Length: 135
Image (cartoon, rainbow, N blue to C red; front, side, top):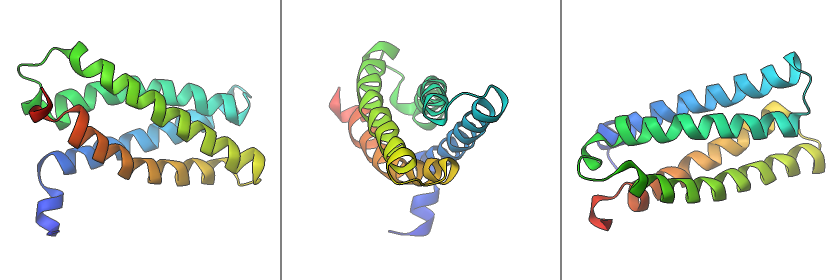
């Protein structure tokens, strides 16, 4: 794969959205744990919900704007929601296993989970959810 091909268009915008989501996830999780004294597991779950809602709008309208012209938001929201439930569930379970099961520091666990999820989610969103050929 050429570097220019990867950095152009939707892939670059998805990378930016993922970076923002990653940062928001860490900041929210940290803030809820340190500021509100929530458990890391609950804080991470709340963070995932907030990041989900933000991601749908950014991915739909900024990453793939050319793919949403003739498609209602609900036609993409339902598959995005379904995929996100699976992703978020897998992320949360992975996070819980790393933190509670293996004793990994909660912020490091969040980083590891988010990096792995980044790659898998891009493939699913690009090829399944926001693919105009699947209309």
